[in-house]
Image 1 (cartoon, rainbow, N blue to C red):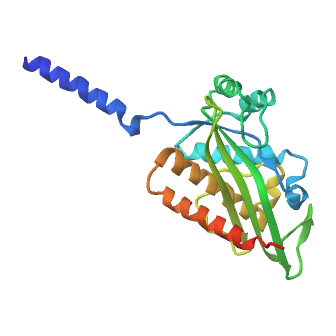
Image 2: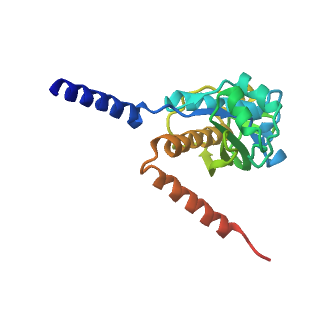
Length: 241
């Protein structure tokens, strides 16, 4: 009986290893084209390249670089999304979610919409202009917010919703490591307050998704605190007539 007992324990041990979180499959994400809800307030959005897809590419590269996710290639995703009814509110039309997942392999679709952008630049002389933004010879700051939505492609339901913010000054920003490069027209803003705010916001998006979808531990307390502070600040800024 001992050999059979040993064999049984061995099988049980193998099953236990398979069931551990460390061996779980990485989430497969597709990052859709970002949208702009603030229009001309963000002049950097308008250029020769598609900034919405440029931002999506940068987020996709950052997500892949974390090692926590598998990311669907843009070329594959862009073609499929062009054929689907995907509206601005982050909802996949009924019956199309599973099709998106089957055609692209994505389990989740990441959607981002620029919901706020502010810039306040104080001049100290010098610098050159580029598409309405002064580059060099300036001390300034920028702020942007992105409404983030993560859709389950199987159910079409929103799994995660969060407004993510990014801030910068001419002195820099306190953010994590930036792993990827800049894309399209956005490369011109890399060292400006605008570029620093974009970088801060995109890193915050990636760190939040890593925490909420993979780590799923005490890290969420930090993001819940940020969300509470953001809501309180928004309430304070509302003035009733």
